[in-house]
Image 1 (cartoon, helix red, strand yellow):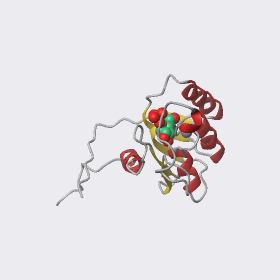
Image 2 (cartoon, rainbow, N blue to C red):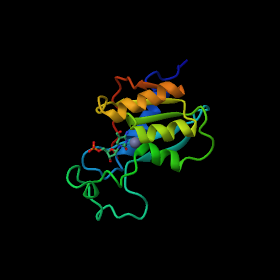
Image 3 (spheres, rainbow, N blue to C red):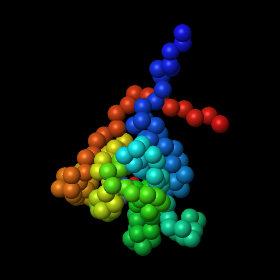
Image 4 (cartoon, helix red, strand yellow):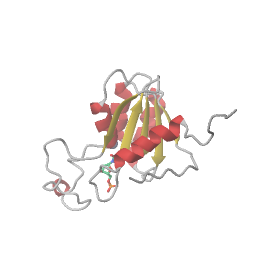
Length: 159
Ligand SMILES: Nc1nc(=O)n([C@H]2C[C@H](O)[C@@H](COP(=O)(O)O)O2)cc1CO
Ligand SMILES: [Zn+2]
């Protein structure tokens, strides 16, 4: 008798894998972020990555990080989490968000208001920023759990 294979990926690895794959679509030269929203039945209901709004030309808006604020990417770029929420279908109440980078305070508000109850993140490279602090404060108040993604798996995709 042959048993089932054992080296399959976990649900968390599967959904974080989709978030990371989505980040590969980002045109941001410095930080690529992907997000995947999963409902309480483990069905994917939204995905997104950071990029400029629909109709705004990737080659015309700036990707700079410094300089006059209007000449940087910051006023224009839609964060992965916001895109995943805006692209989603169905009810997000009780859903989990898998994201490659811990959410900023603006996305934290949208996450809370949409009904998402759990955030699983990979990188926390801006953890000491005021924005991250504000996100944690709001998540704590609103009862949104957040946890660092832990895995020792390496997933390679070769086409
Ligand atoms: N959680 C996040 N989701 C995101 O989609 N982003 C996006 C906005 C920018 O396009 C990029 C951050 O650029 P930089 O400051 O690391 O060069 O990642 C940023 C954060 C950080 O809070
Ligand atoms: Zn954000």
